[in-house]
Image (cartoon, rainbow over all chains, first blue to last red):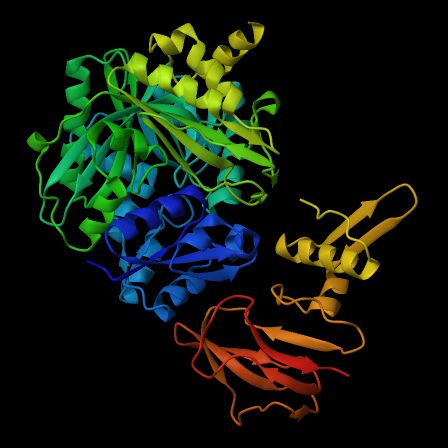
Length: 450
Length: 137
């Protein structure tokens, strides 16, 4: 096992990784920006070093400062968390070049899966169903030809994309040229990579993803699926649950089997997630995330496995020590993301100071957060403040516990998504598990009408 | 986000400068009924010497300025090694931060007297870590 790990992240995930390291007896090194100097992850790590000013490119994305910190502090490994450099193959390579273990899959796999067009091609080779689509589109004319072949409605997507950036729905041919221009411009601005491709727009799909773990000896297991369909209009998830409700055993097994087959095909190691669109009886591969996900706690709750601990163990060369048949899912878990956002202003993110915070407790409740009374919410970063997770032996019990937990929660100083989560949980559609990726706005509007 | 109003003008300016640097803003302007306050980047640099944001602002009389690391790495003193009390006639390389095999020079940014050398040769330094104090008077 490693003796010291650098955590190349901030916020709740930095604390989450810190806890996993401490559980394994591994010393930790935090990095932080000047805007985060009073953050909890700085205080709770064994050592902490400033890597730059507040803006992300000059601190949490400054690869030279981060790798230099790891080397000077004599770390053996780097955990990237999610976001920032987590899916940056070049960062993983640079770590390896300097003798640091990158806690994640091999750089070549990150690169292949990070390029969505390449990922689709690889998945096709593995026999995994993918949405009808195009390769990279170099011009509006290529986009027009592709749309004609696929059939409207279509969706333009940034090949380096994430978080909904560089995505455009195009319903008719006359809107295509403009959508192509704005998608490529947004992708260029967000990822320094303006390439886009096209996919058939699947109407009313559910977003269901499968968690996988692979070790260096070739053992690959899945840890079931999560339903992440309740997404904001920006395609960012708000409520996730495991297992996915109303999924037939046949569909569930097909998803799990496809995920494991895909991982075997690419020689996947460490934790990863395959995202699928499910529409009726059809299942389509969407993308693979080669990192830990924000919503990983719901899987941990139903499988009783610490995924971040497993990431570190695998990176240190340990075997999983269990096979698929040893894993059993139990009960149901739901996660609500409490973000510093105003749901009444299109979920616009907010910066400010947390003037008062009270978190819930009791049986089956877990809170992963980095905020405290007086904590600053800087304007530079993701708006996630806390993840509240509820476990129940049944889905109904998990919902009841979550509702109680949200009512116990107080976050003052900024607008949050807390009330919106409560409203969504109360809808008939959520209760019955009948929602899809487009449901959230209409469910909130219905709730507002009372 | 803006700090609460402190009592004295100097303290108010210093706190606004700190806020401005911590958030990497160009300027902060506060307008009230009877007064307007604006602290800009140039003023902040003169008062607190970017990127030494950890250091408390120095009084104008002493003109003591901190030189801080702007890269993370291993700090080395220059050759010949500077010493406390040494008077610098002009710009000079006082040391460097070694990062991934690259030397990032630490310059005096003009003349002055070295008041303090705050890190030892071979120390690990992070971003904004004060390295030298120079009296510009």
